[in-house]
Image (tube, rainbow, N blue to C red; front, side, top):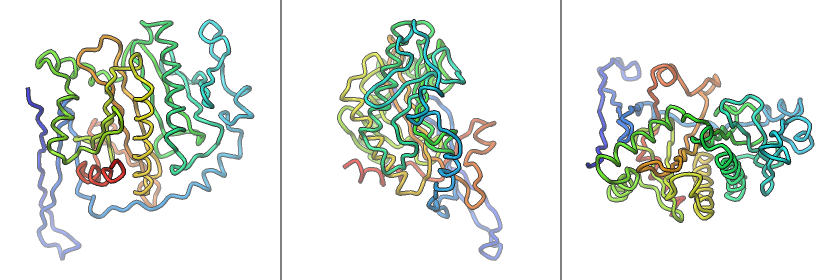
Length: 342
């Protein structure tokens, strides 16, 4: 069945105080995600918005007033250890990254990856190597727990909350890793919709989507190795991009795919930095073994604050209505990013 990219144009008539209260028509869009059917909105404020450069120096100074548990001198005494039947050493060391249990777990297997020794790493120092090492450590931990306990760790995920505007409570770069018998809501929707698409069409949704986006050219960003990137048609937040792997999940992820993904993430982060977006979220959505019609994907979104108040960019529309919105159309995001992926 063909993929439908539905845009529902919206028009609002108002009397504009910036134009002598003359009648003015303002346009916006509702977009329907072609896989899940969820809707998202592109708001008309985009033409007025520029993001100011954020200075993290005061936040950094405040963070140094109490010991950081992830700094090298504190890890041994301030972070928990895994039980010896899971990991004899208590913590997992991987090329300079350290995996420790989450002191406040939200899954049977809930871990944090300390991505390196430095307490603060600005965006322009988030190199492909730094990203590969961090995600590689998360993958190694997930392979360990899924081999040990395949039932309670069937659904795995990796998240990154970079700095406070993205929900990062500790400045020191770290990833959130989980494995549980049930998938989170969004991940569960991806798996179910991909399975339904495959059963009805005999095709993999993301293969068809990439073919469509390559042909149309509006949101296709580019390819690095086996990983392809598109600007998400129905964005969950500003500058929302999706990476599509050849792998289904952690179990068949190859080293070259992880390296290619890390290179792509670093280029997207460079784009965010150029927009003055001070934070971002990233998430990896692996499929379990045997997932029908599935490709592992990752998603990155920029996060910012509402200058000059410093308020959140997430509103009741998003949190309570489940209706995300963005100030940037995906086509603009793709156009800008193609230069970094060429």
